[in-house]
Length: 397
Image 1 (cartoon, rainbow, N blue to C red):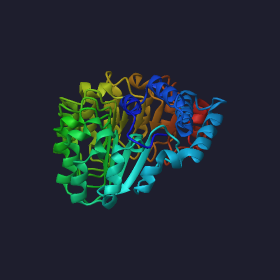
Image 2: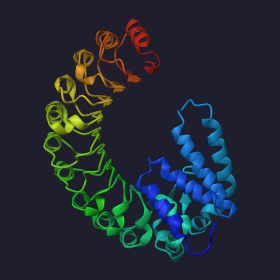
Image 3: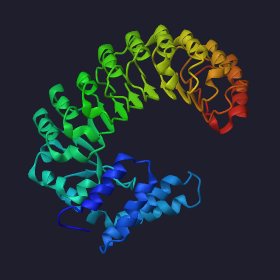
Image 4: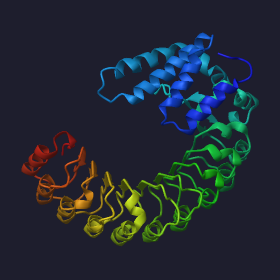
């Protein structure tokens, strides 16, 4: 493993893997290059990369999967001190010890990230392997300084969770040209400058955005929906905010979010009419995952979902805790547009045996692999019918 200046070939290969993490070909080229080096730690990391790519390709029940995982674990235990030495000495904590992934997920405190030791790692090969960084116990001044540092240059994932920082300091990060490589942004339990995210060209490569408990308003949600820079975003999480029927309308009329396939609005205030508006526009037709738990959807909202012919790409529908009755279960059971569902969550509603029998006899739920109906009012015979129809897909009452 080189201890001097980072090798350009390695930096280029790591950048290529980060740019397209789903491409195994690039990972195998990286593995080949590492295994051609003279250094033992390099060759071991090449084997590690190859095993990681192999593990991801193997099916969950493949007989070789366990052996691949054990080999990676052995390599990690023997060599991680060499691979990650500069990071550990500078105060970084490694968050994915047990995952043994190709890239490194790290975290560091605010006071350390602005220190000389941590800054020096940004020119090291060790930091080039880091794709995800979480900042802890950081203040606004430290975050602003971080936004103008080379730490951001090679990251794909950035995380702030419950930090007491100003919106301006967060805006400094998301608008920084150095943030242009970010693909995943998680900002939870804090106030977030949503307009800065929506208006930042640096967010153009963002694939997932998690804004859980960020006091997101309808106006802020509309800014995201109409952003010209978020058309690579396929996953939007907006759990437990202040969203209402106006947010639903913003999505239905969205000028952006052209690639969005997962929308999570759990625990908001969308309501039945809002649900109807949400699914009525063409943007809903692109969704494969729609999460609306605890939104007061009611039977009216569910029936609206079931009537939308263009809403035919859904594989994941979550309606937990929405005051649903047998009307909803019957509507879902008869919905041709929901025949692609493999995950259906109807937990914590008012569905009884009548609705359960309707689901069990549905001709359109053949692809279900997970059905959640706990905390309803379903009798034993109806549970038996569900078990006979869906088997391992059922979670027990």
